[in-house]
Image 1: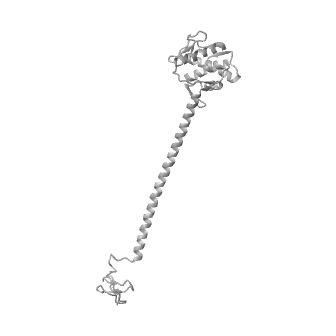
Image 2: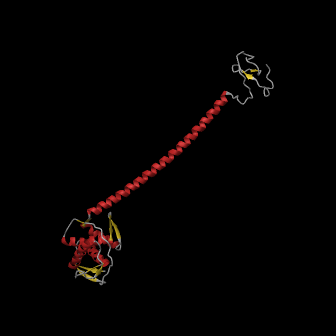
Image 3: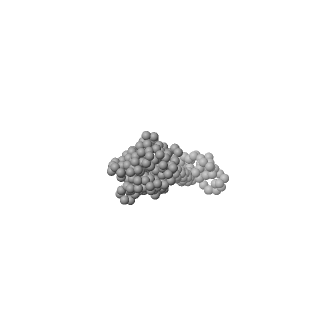
Length: 246
């Protein structure tokens, strides 16, 4: 059979030998097998190799999209995991610091370290609050520790000073601008100040140098007296016989 005008005719192609047969042929004119109508120009016709190639291409594209999505999700999960771990580590460090500070506060302040504290207060210019070796002390608290420390060192005592909560002085006042205070007087003053703070829960407005209850030294001047006495001990290993203030 001649092959002509195939673009305008609808033929049957033999699936066995590939012969082009007339449209109304039920059997191949070449090999004689039964055939069905398959138009070369029909949109339903697609060579097997081409159909399979197109299907494989689609599968590859789908797999690539899947890999990209999985990769993106994995990256997000890893980032969240890292951020969560960093957050947990920061929280643990913060909690550890808080626990350490609370433990130190509960143990009290070592008497042997009070001269070092006085030196730190002096070098920090008498701050309203000081951080010292894990301790966090308000001015009222370190006034109490300094007062107790002066008495304890004078008596040769050891151990720890209990750290208590104290309110600041309500209305600090003092009439004495400068003074030279003997050891017996500033030790007695330190004893009276700490006892008064134990009884009242706050820093005193003033302290009497010799006479109890006198408005001689303001709160800050009282702190200066104890700091200077203990700083002298820090440098020499003994309390001074006289402290000059301010």
